[in-house]
Length: 238
Image (cartoon, rainbow, N blue to C red; front, side, top):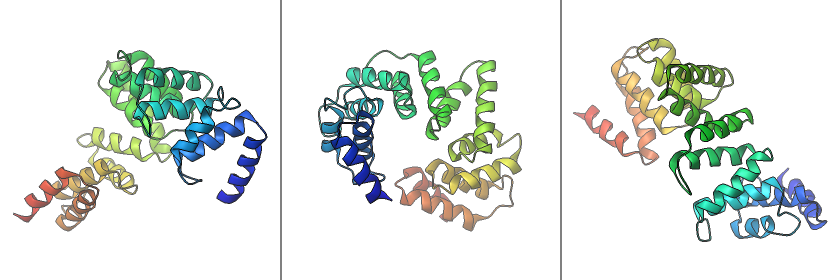
């Protein structure tokens, strides 16, 4: 399938089809279905045919955000990502929302960040639901209610990021459900989910205490380089 995508996309890109140029740039940048090649991705994203394509704009914006293979330019990254987001790119909306929250490339703009994160979630991106919910949970009562709606929706769709945050929220309110959510979220080996599930096993939250299972969760998190997991393993060994 990858080879077929590559041949078709490269053929269309060679023919100067803007959408194909943008798709090729994006696939080369992500490295999910084609071998990752940031330099070639940048070249295609800046070609005359691909210049205004939203995927090309996303690639340029993301590369400039992270300084991937060239000097970072967060201010220009914001501009590229915003144009891509307005053209319908959900991944660009995600990255722009994160930048607007972090003050990277300009002032913090919480309200606009939330709007772009909502767009990213509506567009099918999984991770920004977690970011969106955590920002809303720190806000007003109305925003906390909105966060809960997003999290419940994410759980129904099997979004592990939503399940993680919801498990953290429900620990005291509904420990049995919190445990089930943490266990589901940990299937993707999210380190926060592994730590939380380990804590639930250790403390008997929603399940009888099972120290062997807690140790297994902490070990898996530790393998991902999580320092806190190592500390909890040492505590279990005492």
